Every structure is written in C-alpha cells, then in structure tokens.
Length: 256
Image (tube, rainbow, N blue to C red; front, side, top):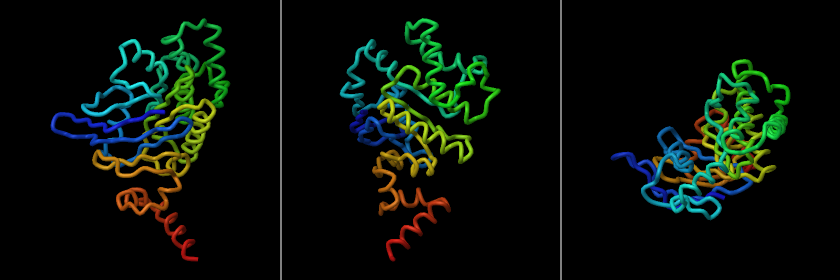
C-alpha cells in the first residue's frame, strides 16, 4: 500500500500539486487520470522520489519516504518496478539482456539463476521464444511486454506504469491492460498507472484518482466513474464519442 497525505509540489511560482491525499491499494490497479497539465506526471515522479514535495508525506507500507536513511531508500528502490511510456529498452541489448539488467544491477544472483528467472518472466508475458531478438526486431506490443517482464523480474512490491498503452493499437492495448492487472493480482503488487486511455479506465480501473489543475477532483472505481455527477469528470470522461454512447445507454436503461 502507498499512502500520500497532503502532498504539495511547486516549481518556482508554478504550484503543481495542491494538497493531494489518497491511498493506492495493494493487489489493485490504481489509475491516475487527468488532462494535460493536471499534475498527474508530477505526482507519479513524486511517488518515485524523482521530485521532493515541499509539504506532505508519502509512505510505502508504513515507511515514510522522507524519514528513511539513504540505505533504506536504496532498499526501497529495489522493491520498485517501472514500465516507461516508450518502453525504454536498450537497443543494443537482446530481449534476454534487457530483462536481466535489473538482476545484474541489484542482486548477486549467478548467471544460471538469472537466466532461469528471465525465462520465467518472459514465459509469463508470452514471450518465451524471444530471448535473442533485439528490440528493433519485435513489435511495439512485444516491446511493451518485454518492459513489463523487466519491471517484474526482481519481484517488486510496487509497480509504476507511465502511459503503458502509448503508441499501441486498441486491441494490443487491451492485452497489455489485462496483463498488468493479472500480474498485479498474482504477485500482490501495489500498481500505479498514469494514463489518458479511457478504455483502460473501464477495463482495469479498480481505483481511479482524477486530477484537475493540481487538485484531487474525484476518486472512485470503474463502475462509479460511469455514474458520477461530478461535472469535471463527466466532461473529461465523456469527451469521446465512445463514452457518450456508453452514458446514453446507461441513462436509457435507467429510464426503462
């Protein structure tokens, strides 16, 4: 579980995060959504320790980040997996080498143990025959699965995903959503996803935090978001034709 309390973050005169408090639950897919400039990327980077809030606390299963020693912070970082927006694979490394990278960096496992673990996670993301391929030789969807495999290879307690469906076609995006949700439950991970994809919201939004101009405007789940009367989130979610149709159908059903 990750708990944030009264987080404030500014850059110069720009006040980006304004007193945000929420809990990201273990074993659930927790989504951060909002328009560009809402503060969701800054919030994600603050959770990762890239930005330091001026006010407020962030705790990882009771460990308040600002109170940890440097050694404790290093230990915490080994418990975090990250899926970057563009996958961020090393072009000069094979799939196997990319996935093995965190194990070589943060553990003392032997070569045989590393290979066994790499094969386990590649099998889990349905890439069991891709070990010797380079990123340029596989599709965008496969690259994303490699990125997920690399993120979970070290058995993280916390998984952060920045726009994991960016650049993917809708069908592949659904596959990635389902994979992330399955892994979250299987490994009992606290997963936090920064996304603008409303299909993801309906597919895997077990906890949704909606930001607007730096404030937490609303929070709930994928069912509650379809029924909310909050004007800001209704305008945001139903700005697409797909969600306008969904809302119309729901309203028609309630009138029958």
